[in-house]
Length: 226
Image (cartoon, rainbow, N blue to C red; front, side, top):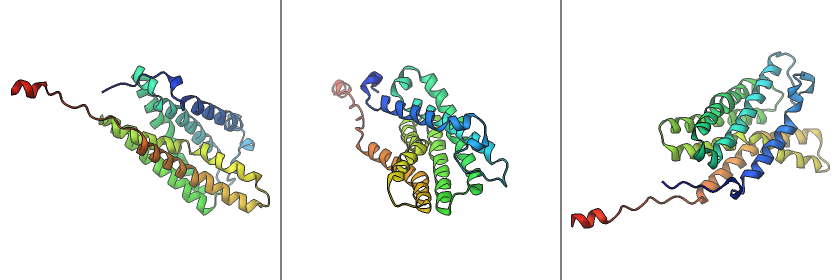
C-alpha cells in the first residue's frame, strides 16, 4: 500500500488545528490549575463534596484526550514514528477519552444542568466511549481502515468542548436575551450541537475523501499460464 509522505506543512489542517487546540487549552485550563473550587467555571454542587475533584479529573483526562487525539490524526507521526502513534493511542483511550467520558457520566446527575443538558451530556459520553472503544478494538484486530474511521468519529466527540464554546460565545452578543435564554442556548450548543456538528462534518469528510483503489493484479501470470 502506498504511503503518503507529504510533509506536515503541505497539510492545510495541521497548523490551524494545533493553534485551535493550544488556544483553547490556554483559555480553559488556568482556573483549574489553581485547584481552587472558587475558580471553577462550572457551578459546583455543595451537597456533593466529590464534585470538584471529579470535575478536575474529568478536565485533566479531557486535556490528555484533546492532545493525544490530534497526535493520532497526524499522518506524518503515524508513518514515521508508529511506536509513538501506538503509545499516544493507548494514552488517548485509557488516560484520555475513556476516563473523561466515564467521569462525565458520574458527574452529570449532580450538576445544575437542565434535563436537556444532562441528556446531551450523557449522549456525548456514551457515544464517545462507543466510538473510542470500537476504534481501539479495530486496531487490535488490525482492521486499520475501520480503526481510522471510528477514531475520526471519536475525534469528533473529543473536540466537542471546543466546538460547543465556539457556538455559544457569539450568542452573548445577541441583544435582548435574558439569563434563561442564555442557559438554554448554551446547553443546547455545548451538549448537543457541538458533537452533532462535529460528527456530521466527519461523516461528510469520509464520504468525500478519495478512497484508494485496490491494485489490479498483474497480467503476467495469466500470460505465462497461457
